[in-house]
Image (cartoon, rainbow over all chains, first blue to last red; front, side, top):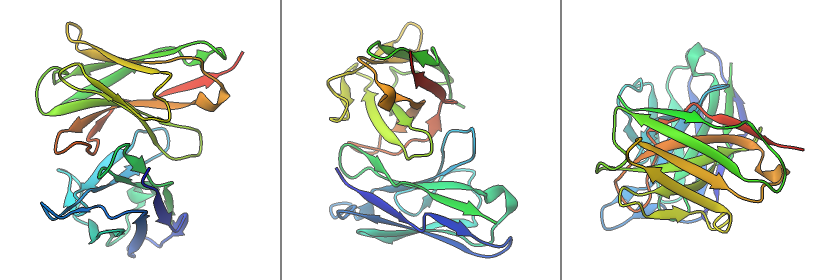
Length: 112
Length: 122
């Protein structure tokens, strides 16, 4: 299985500041035939299911604020929140869908 | 807007079978464009994909659980179900159903059920 490693495990950022979460995969997630990276990002708040934020490593899901952005290619990816809002406090997960079974990172807890 | 509503018992005895159902509204499990998956999350831990139902009725499972898992669909009720046999304490988790938009062999999950906490205990 493809192992997804997130860093840091937890992160404290002041409101209005930038938050950066990293995700590394044990194999490349770049499919060269279509030049797409098979990586998604989710936000999960307590007692709720995960919410899709980004897919194809950098495509924002409809309705997701543009302060959320994804970048990276191959094995190294980043989720950036440009200006942290109080409602962004949550756990964030990356997920690869390049190979089966799909696998998730262990999560990054974001706090203020 | 699709909605996924889960149902099923929250307590299962060891060695017995866990059974959960996901009822879908606002979309059809037999329509094109989507697969239907089950995912679980042990307390304080990450997410584990269990398996999926294709619109054809075909299924695919995580090899780590394949020997104990059955996912099935009922198109007349527009719902799909999970059965996990011979459960142990290690199967204690929150179980989610989720929809996969079909972009490739495997995909992301764009809509989720509310989650069902399941405890395996006598």
